[in-house]
Image (cartoon, rainbow, N blue to C red; front, top):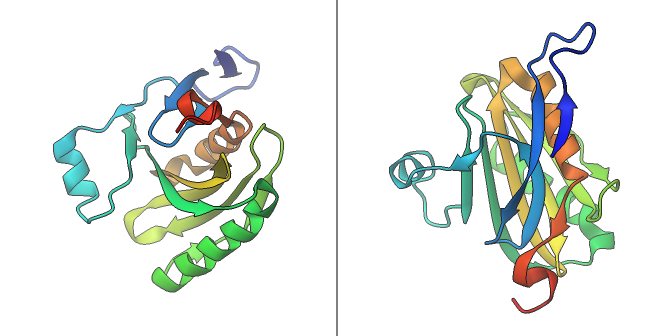
Length: 176
């Protein structure tokens, strides 16, 4: 468990945040997230994600933050993760032209390189970060959706989380 922010720190206006390891076994990824995330209930999943192809993993916390993860069934070398993220970004811009979308960034600070970009969804007062990484050269898509009013906090948390990505479970030893 890592202490990311301590409420007692001088000048801190933020509550304490502790990261804990979370295994996303359905996609073979382990990462660290703030305490308090849990699997979204089935009826809520149908309300928020009613379409076919719902993400394999849907987590949420009590503050309205949602995290999804799903394998994309494409092989990509980790060295090409930025290119894959740029392709997903272009597709996202086509699908959601009304939203402001950032350039693609690359985080290489962890065990798995992660390409990511951010969407500002002003109509629903939320932001969304899409992140792509690889597990055994298979592309994995994660999304982090959080209230826009807490964007500074969650942008930092999500980028910290990228540094903790690693393969887990059967995927790590190649049996999946």
